[in-house]
Length: 140
Image (tube, rainbow, N blue to C red; front, side, top):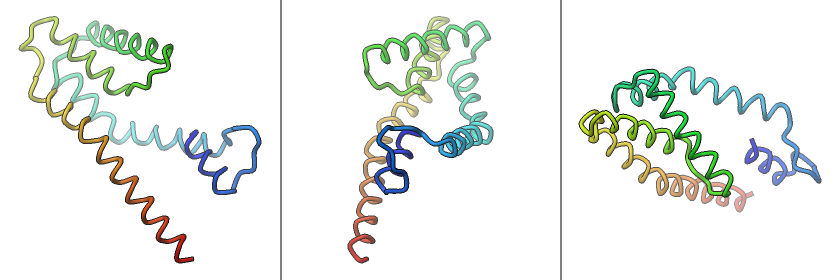
């Protein structure tokens, strides 16, 4: 929501001396997150709770509590952390407390590789989008 509002201000669509997020931006962002969770969230939940390691309800509670503690402490110190990384690490930790073989480390390795690839891939896509935008604005 903050990024969208900043773009609206930078583009001259919103004229604001204070950074106030408009209600339509809140509704659109919340709808996008909700629809993404509704249509694809079940796959992530299934992977984390059943494919990575088989969690029982009390183990899920412990993983969420551990992830929440990490996120809260990092927020307190002002350190940006991915919620997905914190929760996935907590789930692997909870699974490993039963026995190390309870965690499917091959899948965990693939998840970590995906995280590593995400940062440069996002930077490349952002750079490409900026290049296209500059190309379009210079031709106008």
